[in-house]
Length: 252
Image 1: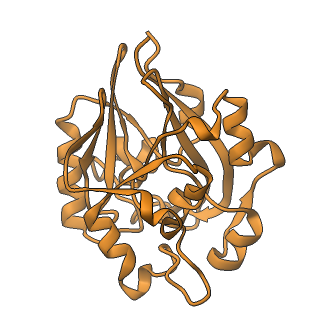
Image 2: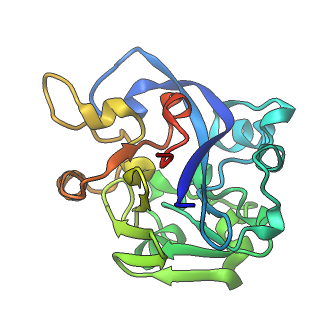
């Protein structure tokens, strides 16, 4: 069996201002953002890409967003429903270290974690406007520190496992990485927050692609868009509910 990718919903951030997703567009509109974890199967053990958020109370207290997460969308419950035993996961890839992509890292007690060195550096010392996203606040221990002893630092494009590679796509954050998965049905790119939604990728009458409203370098962002254009992959965004209708991915 070849590799397959299953998107798993672990909650919703309701009422997010749309320009936070589509930079410069959608003023006055709100967006319900799907919190997604991606499960890659078909290799020696399950692989997880990003681990989602903590619970609604934490999300409201520290980030000011309303997280909708009924019990059946708890990450451990969702994984169990997908037939995954937590202890069987040996590899977790964080596309970046914003709170909504790594908060459940500690759930995976047997896994190694693959993170760009540039991302680790910035997470430790972000600009003031980005400190909340990395949970660099008094009284909070950023979730990636919980697995410090199991982080495998990568630098640039790297093969993680047969058929699974990371590619450097800075712009949203300095160390953002996307995940290329080779399947029997073609190549897929788990884009992280370089591409939050399909609208970010397809663009509009003004721009070919739309960056996220949260970014550290727009010049790098557009260079990363160009890079992705040349990869020959089907794009899988990180926060678009339509992903759930299009997936699973990689099935012939």
